Length: 289
Image 1 (cartoon, one colour):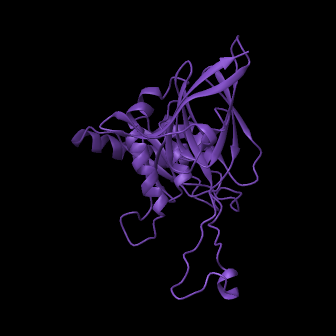
Image 2 (cartoon, rainbow, N blue to C red):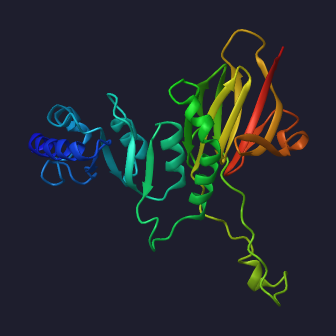
Image 3 (cartoon, helix red, strand yellow):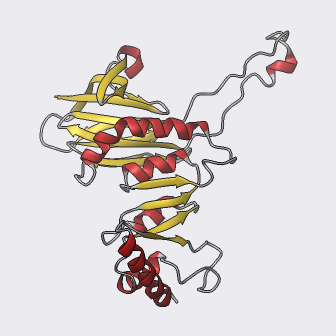
């Protein structure tokens, strides 16, 4: 079935490119966890297990793409970003952490949440992430494919993750977000037992995700948040690491603009780096005996 679909679409693509010579893709309805056998899902589509068949049967298709709603988002990205296939996600959910992972780790060239232009509810965090990635896009594009960029996600309860990036190994620990305190209703006394029971309204646990970029021997940029980052050297020299400059900021017309200089108690006198949700940090490091 995969071979015959591919051969048919190769004819369609050839006709299309004869009129408009532009890149063309075909997207896949993915196999679901409860669909074990071909026939219980559209097994003739460009699924990872038949990518080689599609490449042989439809060599003029430029991209094999997933409609990606599965929980194991990262695993699907890994399977679609193989053998030179660019990762393009034409239909997916509105999870902000997925955008960060797709761009920072899997070099996606497109990420399209379903119904974002319609009446479906869109998480406010998604627009915030899009803005941050737009600011960072020149730097992200400059570092893709160089081994100096990656992304990490953490959920509540996950153990710390270690990432070797540049001259340091980064240990990332989940911190999540602060508890949101609900505003006091008008006319309600703060000590009232009715209000006391609902004063602290915790938000849902944050799925932390961040892009990590080594921009120099001792310099990093981070975008995203919800985690603590500790550093240990992986090159010869002194083994202790301190935080030098820690700056929160934004890129304005491609230029880094500092909005907050972090020091003192905010970084434990140069020992603890906390990337709060949906922020951009620039950090320099130094080593000492």
